[in-house]
Image (cartoon, rainbow, N blue to C red; front, top):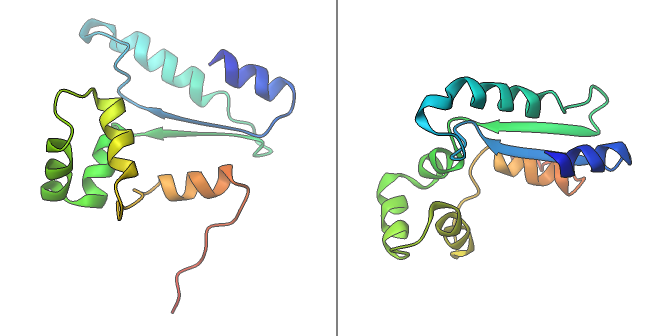
Length: 120
């Protein structure tokens, strides 16, 4: 969070993407997690220079939906004994892997380019 606050203080266009169910919080810390998520959401600016996206419940859920459960499980099996963050990055590197919504919109915003419209 501090890095985002510093970037915003210098008026650097900043995008913050986070999982709603942060793994940093233990089972009994749900209130702390909610407060932290609210702090992250509060970094967004009305002028759009700082945007915040909360992935609910997490990136893996969006990836599963985009790939389908069978494909997701097959890709997970390619990377046994790998933590979730590393496995997600390795899956993203696989040829033909779909970019799950809303990540496509986020990536276009971060690249400062509008998302292409679907062809009719």
